[in-house]
Image (cartoon, rainbow, N blue to C red):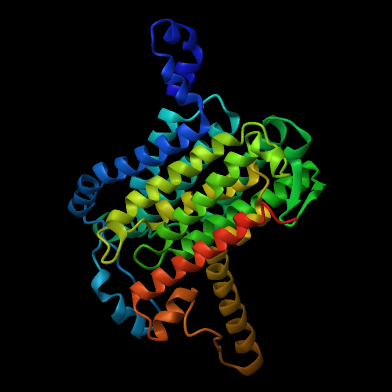
Length: 379
């Protein structure tokens, strides 16, 4: 909003000695301001929102299929969840105030945030209020959530391909270590790839959200890396680093900054021992949004590196479930590769404390993000 106002009335502002406000049209200033605003919004709104959740008795009831993990998580029962509403609100407000709302990609990103946030909030609300409301409905089914995710991904991919800011690079799949090589995608392939990226990222972050601060911290690191990449790709820096310039992608850096600030602000309340959990409300929206940023910046493959923690967590679940089903057919009983999946619970079973798991995963995530940024200079 401020961007549009300053851009429209810049001559009037300069004539009245307010020309310095043009900084609100500079991506670098927008990013810093968005990080600060989304962080402060979380800090300011957080205590009141957490109190409201407590009054509504919207508390988590963690249940696992292994008694040992249930004992470890006993102290978390009753902790307010649906804290993702706090994250989404901070991202949305800071984006609406500071980003260029005329940018098509920003409009699609806001749709992604609200859509997936609504899906997650519906699921959380149905699960957490089942005990004190009429009706037996307890959350959305996995198929229902998947259909909503795929539906959104197809819509966003279709409109991004057809109505986004057109240039040859905006529909090309690029590879991290081969900047001069790319595959121009037809519409069907672009939609298919975008659907896989957004749906996969959304569910991967959802699976990672199992320990205090784990998903929020990893997402803050991931969004910082994409903040840097989007700023480079959407500005003149792209040519200097032999990356492909995507017009309008610089505003995705503002979105990434909003994610980073909101996640850091949420960590204020979500660090161990957590006062609130993000729930599906936050995890589904954050994963889908970072996936959309990767699509716009054409860095889908780099997302696999930057979001390596999310990928590993999701793959551990796929491996565990697949091998369990295979071994049950082959040997008559289900066998496991990991002590428990997702992978963070495996290390808990190995004797790591919750804080050790979270901080070590953060460290690995930071190293992966640094490796991904290093690919900008490797070719």
